[in-house]
Image 1 (cartoon, rainbow, N blue to C red):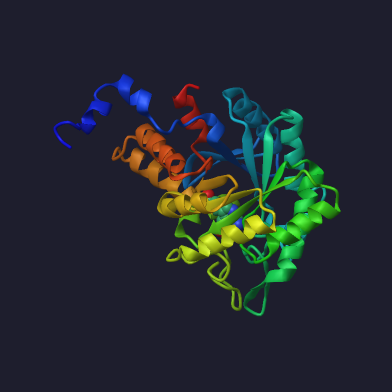
Image 2: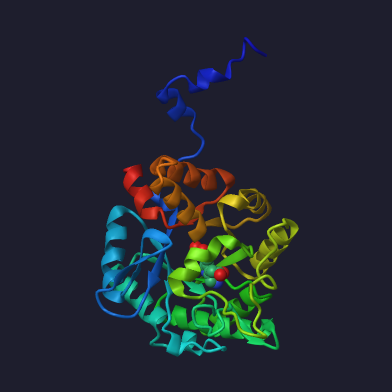
Amino acid sequence: MYPLIRNRRLRASESIRRLVRETVLTPDDFLVPLFVVEGKGVKEEIASMPNYYRLSLDNLEKEVKELWNMGLCAVLLFVKVPDNLKDNAGTEALNPDGLMQRAIKTVKNACADMLVMTDVALDPYSSFGHDGIVADGTILNDETALTLAKMSSSHAQAGADFVAPSDMMDGRILTIREALEKEGFTDTGIMSYAAKYASAFYGPFRDALDSAPVDIKDVPKDKKTYQMDPANRLAALKETEMDVAEGADIVMVKPGLSYLDIVREVKDAVEVPVAAYQVSGEYAMLKAAAEKGWLDHDAVMLEQLMAFKRAGASIIATYFAKEATKLLNW
Ligand code: PBG
């Protein structure tokens, strides 16, 4: 007891702080989300995500090379689909020559060792902005899972290393795993968005992809019948345990910062790597506060990323990956 024990001895200098530091952030921890659009020479800034862009394939190629040269090793691809290609069934998602399929090939051609993960959900392809097929005011579960399984095979065929289902339908991990096995994609991994909450933090992302649920009669206005209630923790444990049993190689908790308790609980409950997604709204909040001069951007950014790792995330999907890597000077 005090005065024999003085906790401040372990904080007295930068050298002792370095020596006893429990968590070290590195670029190896980061998964870089990328937004892809049709066109040539396109690099459009997303209004609600300052300094983040939608890229056409030629710029995607440049970006991926830059990321790799900086020391980043994994990307998570999203596509913005033209309105005329959207329908309720998400048909375009299965097009072997669709934007996602071409994006996967572009990344792999630019940089064969860059790990490619792909978002698997119907929302960017859905004329209703839902992650699944809409019928009679509900989202069809099993039919959607079958489409997602075909979509996953299509991504694997194009060269994706991991598919990342973000839809929260029941049973989709098993349905996807079985389809991948059947098609011979036994080495294609699954990173499940296992504990994904119906969060208000996804707003800027839906701006980026123009993928928000539409306001039409008989179409659910929100995603609360499939994404989880932010009030619940048991559901997160059940979802992640089931996804691991169904064949998920990695499980993800999303959003990140407001759900670090869930990250820790999931980390302690399952024996697969846990990812956390620092989502678009979290990115936008810090950018806005920094722009006002109210927060020190770089310091807060690194503190937040560190918090994910301390909470148990071994993978952090973050729009700050590049900025953080520059600062970490790895
Ligand atoms: C699509 C998807 C979403 C995000 C990742 N995949 C949006 C949603 O579920 O509405 C959100 C990512 C972010 O906000 O950064 N299923």
